[in-house]
Length: 175
Image (tube, rainbow, N blue to C red; front, side):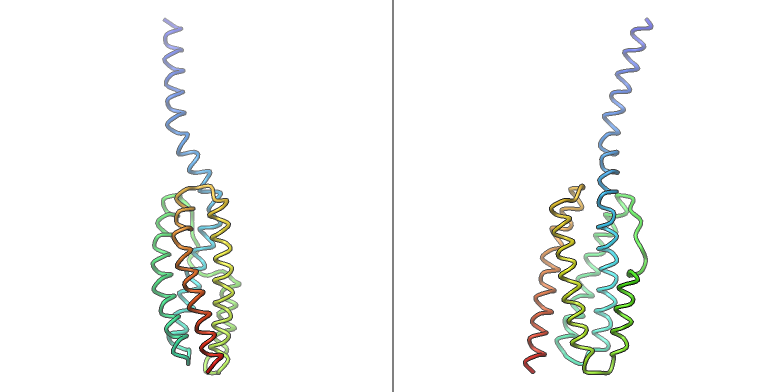
């Protein structure tokens, strides 16, 4: 009788361990991918702010247009990032990073000058290059399949932004 109870208890423990293993694995994967989700979210916040600034403060039409595109697309991307972070219990910041804030402050000091457009484009090109590198690293080494899939899906959007920025740079330089 005692042997039967022990076998039943061992079977139940094994079943419970099997049930909880995937959630424990997901939690570990979420922890591994949390820095990526946090960085991408802060990047989205910074890109939205930069895009809004360009729509309002740029003097070149192409900068205004690229800015509007960034606002639209990064808002969409951030909806997915926030949903995934919530699902994986990753807490996200509510503001861009200190470095991103510093960059925006420096840019704002150029509002009303001809340097604003070129500084904005240079800053955005660098930001999008860094984001593409971050995405590529996540796709290659990320621990959570959903986070890797989200990174993979975001890559063409960010690459397209970089193309638009480069085209605008070329347009302004040739003008």
